[in-house]
Image (cartoon, rainbow, N blue to C red; front, side):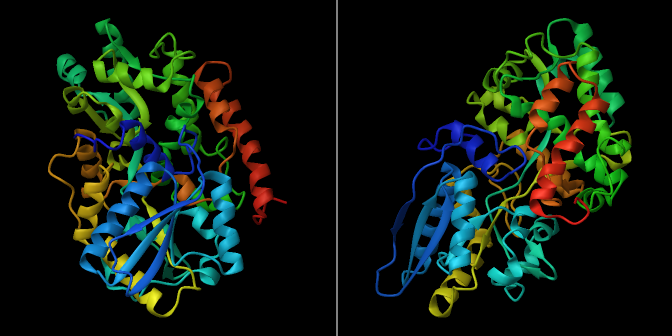
Length: 445
């Protein structure tokens, strides 16, 4: 699917990662505050909307604002940009604390939302009609207590295995639903002689995490209480077999000789091109990465499947949900009414169409009434199929605020054969301890 000419494909990667905090480790650049507006006649209500400066998120916000103002000429929407990362977080929290927040703002869904103290700082949106049409997975990650606080902007994506469909067809392989089947496919690729079974690109260390982070659907299937117990310091990666499996899989593909020989010196972009050209069969990666492939024929050859676990009956994919649009409690009167109308538009089929026009979807919308364009990439179609059969799980970061800063270094060591899976998992358990204590979580003192 072609990307808008005004948005280089590299920016698709940036918007995808802007929706995650687990692997927010890319070259998405920060910038200064800025704003844009237009469309309204200036005689009615004016509302301001704060978004991070990831190019895709800005494009989505401006696209929705323009389409909304076209239908509501008495409302002027000004889109203000903020830096990403820690600086942006500080802006959000400071404005909420001082009562200076914009009328509407875009922010993470999931555990980071909880750090904003939604019950104190945000307007509950339960009485809005569009809430009933939210996908349950998204509704879960924008809720706190019994209330829903967010509307979706953008689409979801997954942590999974990108694979070359042409290689699969040539070798007569089928999409695996268990880890054993996946390893058998890797052996078949290796035996064929010309294709790398599994790509790893450890020059960009953040790419090393996918076999662990993307495995969470299997963890949740085997141990549904893991996220809650992990947050409470009652469960560990090293001592929970289902959680340890991600580290073990990382070690197994290395020890079996399935990786590209230059995994330590290969960069992410080069790896993606090798997958696209058929030099490699599999690449554990975020599914949104496929949209960076510029050659349309090569893009059509890229499919997606969930990181397999032990049981085909519970095969499911780990997803990163769309960001949320939130309304601070300081928004009142005509501005509140206008913002509610804007949210209703953003969560409507017309609003989703405006988003698709502004930026290519990386997965399904979180609004059940919305549809994707007919020409979405094969990788997006594959992801949608998991949603259609309810085989999805939020990533761990949407269910727990704990993610250690050293995971990418640990997974590089495990994936390079420097450290065992068991040692890596134990080291990561210690890595998250510092963060949990800094967050003041119960059970970690």
